[in-house]
Length: 352
Ligand code: SAH
Ligand code: SF4
Image (cartoon, rainbow, N blue to C red):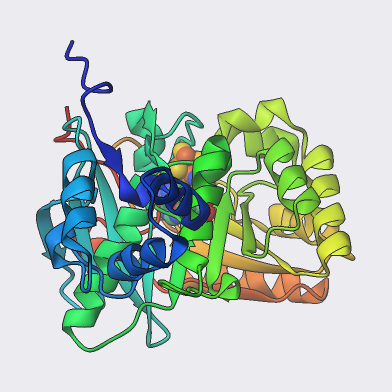
């Protein structure tokens, strides 16, 4: 095994704005210079240190010697036939790879970002779950995906405003890196992504939801349910054995009450599995009195799971039951299915 950790320079994308200030202060530069570098990274989207505008030559030299900009090279780019989705396979320094997707969602450009290589949660219908857990992403690797999409959009004269943490991995299993990366992309001197346009989607890691509540994190929260009884849910989401639905919904209730914010619940609709009226009624009862919105996603096909998506009539019937409980719901448009960039189809089978 190569030991690259020691020799690898600092990745500037890993640094928060204060940390960048401290690094440069240690070299004798005032905070003004950290501002120049920050704006070069996140306003100009510079790919190299030499491309950062108005940088003092002595500082440029030191940065080039001791740091780097951790851009992730695109190993492949695939466009969906409908032109609404573009999938990037981005290479990491250790030869792993992750997928990042640019989608147009109601006309708005959205980056669907990965937080881990693989996933440890093992949801049986999800391509990422099927590949298992390889490793966490660093803050810089998460930031680099956002910058990548922002750069692609800029070349078309467009701006990135939306982020969904719905790519590969479970964001609350990599909590610190995810929060650090979101702090960077929200910084108003840089990419300035508004927190209400960032959605964190979790399989329901209860301590993570509680921490988001305590720390009053400003993003939107989506919780993937898929089953409204412990028995049904653990069949599809093995990790749900660690936290009962009662514990999960309790944490969600505290979140909505403390932060005064709605929660989105995601439900992959699988034909004959979790799409019957019994599950719809159970879901209606479970979420009663909660400020909730349900996103229904007819199952996207994956190699490792034989289930089929729910037929449109049955989707309508499911929605009608929820409406009877006063629960609003939306059916997620199927996007990018032909390039396997739909929900849960992200996997990098060709990665080491
Ligand atoms: N790990 C997080 C975020 C990534 S998955 C989570 O599970 O929430 C993003 C969304 O895609 C989740 O709601 C997940 O349940 C859903 N999903 C996964 N596989 C799917 C599939 N094959 N079809 C439809 N939705 C799927
Ligand atoms: Fe992981 Fe989310 Fe896939 Fe489940 S659905 S395996 S939590 S990425």
